[in-house]
Amino acid sequence: MQRPTIQDIARAAGVSKGAVSYALNGRPGVSTETRARILSIAEEIGWVPSSAARALSSDRAGVVGLVAVREPELIATEPYFIRMVAGVERTLAEHGVALLLTVVPDPARELDIYRRWWGSRQVDGMLLFDMRVRDPRPAWLRASGAPAVIIGAQRAYRGISATRVSYQDAMAQAVSHLVQLGHRRLARVSGPRALEHVLRRERHFAEVTKELLGEAQPQPQVETDYTARAGVQATRELLSRPKDQRPTAIIYDNDVMAAASVSTLAGEGVRVPADLAVLAWDDSPLCELVHPAVTAFTHDVMAEASQAADLLLTRIEHGPTPDRWLAAPRLTVRASTAGHLVP
View 1 (cartoon, rainbow, N blue to C red):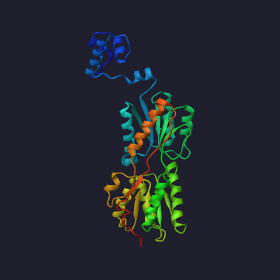
View 2: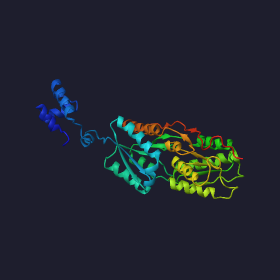
View 3: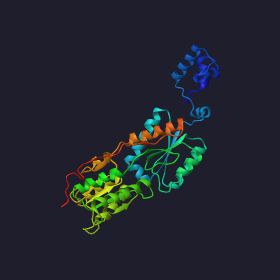
View 4: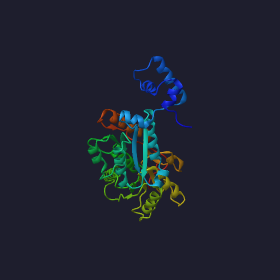
């Protein structure tokens, strides 16, 4: 069945296409009665305006772009990404704006896609996340003037709006929690160090462990690609160290790696938390589906992404917009750390 057109409305109403256009666009040129009849027929036959025509008349595409650099394995298993996209979609849908989402495995392709979208007027603005240490996107955005918002930025970016979050207090809370339980040998399984937020967590972890534990014990940090497989491999590497260097607690940069490690360790004779305490940076249902349930930082990913989408719509409509600070994550203590005292 073909989509209803303005010609169909004109035929049903017994008027010209021009009269229909006037009525649908709220312009003078038709009587009140004729306008009401045209609008009623349009609703009855399910007519909706063409996005292409709307873009030509308003200079807006009604679309926001988001490029995600993710490996297929991570896309299939990562709750954070799915919840982020859901939060963005929730706000955009309320405003009749669509999301153009592309997933690529290589960051080298990311900027080319944004350039193509902006140059061909496919999008009105862009959402960015996972900012890198030497990231080419901010410079291009400033030069092109394309509206953009960074989700969960660790710092201010000149000329680009962002939702902001700081990890310093959260890392101090995580390490303090483990130290108060008696842990003296801590480790961290991180994401890729090319990401700015990963490096920030690395620095905060080193600073707070030194402050609370001194330099007598090593505090290793192992880099991974965020996948469950890599997280388990890093955990095995840490637990294979000599006993006096083996961690008694590990902080994981995401819930996927923490949950996979707890599940795998159970089959390998490692008791959680008796032999190893586990803490995840992101909380999701995964943390409660494994046994024991995983202590994690809880934050509303969907609400945070919705705020970023709302900020971008404001930026598109009104120009440069101040950054918005997100609520600090809170530590939800569960059985993977609770009540464990290291001898």
